[in-house]
Figure (cartoon, rainbow, N blue to C red):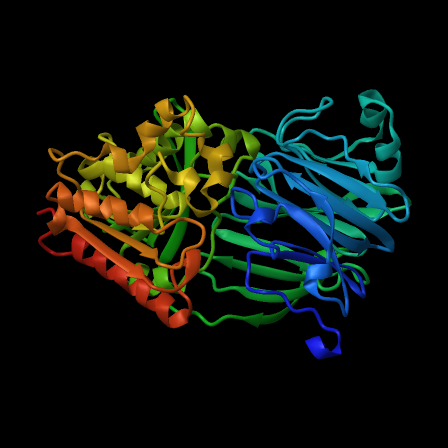
Length: 541
């Protein structure tokens, strides 16, 4: 039921805010108290308690961090009958400090590594590691009784309380988790193929009941119907050629799902297949990728092919259904490729950390290796191969333009969307300061390696670049549109105007579009550009 302000409802001004109910009449809120209460990254740096029926100006500050933090927050919740309050300071993008209040007990710091993540399940703490700790490897998920863990006097006592729920291998990583009343469901990736594991919690202990293994090209996932009262699950599944389906299942028997609904097919996927290959990167690392194409693809280099990548922030690229890719690209007999390069999360923290900061070039070497593998297999040729990426993926494709090992040597066209491109000033624009944990700090000696993968600083007049389409949004509040504007302006100054294309939407935020009509236009713009540059009959002949 909506409660109007005049009847005691809460109303906040437009802002990058955070909020959570502490109880029925108290709101925990941050981000609405002016610039002085924001971090350098543009996120809240304090938590305030605001009582119902009082002016926002009378809210009381209860917690704060430093301006140099990425963000600060707090929230309260019930977890299977237990009441928790959690406060955190995100010190960098990948490190945080936590304080927990259990019921009426006093606040207590959670003694875990700064780069670990924490959650709860009933009376258990759940700790996900990004680095090795107490004999458990990076990428592990551990459980421990919350009360005992917070009260333990040293690491030896804490270690004795830990139960591993997931231990990574060379091929298998933890991707996500969901909870029902009695089950913790883990979504894992084994060589980028989904596997779901079902842990039941009873009598103070977890037990692994079953595993469901997926298949190449499909991405099943589960979410709770009502995690506090039921073990029912929504099961969704989709893939490059399969529209999203929805089914209802019980956590105790997830393979016996009741089909409920399915999205219609938006393109003719007849004869389209999904294959998984690996490419050898410059240092010998095997880099997986998915190739989606018509069965019987001619291996003569003639197929227009679009290579997509991201490679950052421990984000995994898994199979998903895209009507736009299908209708605008695959239906025409073209090929689509998704590369699982380092910097992502496909193999857990080690895969991500292998391309952090001074090691960033590993992500670009991986992407180039996939491009070369496609060419050597005869799937496509440089004149027929395009690449696409947005945000951090825009930095990737910007480097595919500027790197001498890529450019026209590998690509016939590049689509660079809402991109990060000026690595000298990225930390001074909008949310950029929060990404120094990923890229480095250009105001320090880090600039010595940052400049090597700053596309804006690595363009020159003598190089012949492939055609590029750069798109951004005036209203992007995450990656400043100045990145895109500066790169395009420099290309024009270098005399590259005939092969440089630019579109800036005046709405849409970091997504680049504000509604489906704009999204359709932006998608059409990209695929029309790719069609004209890669699929023209005379192109490359």
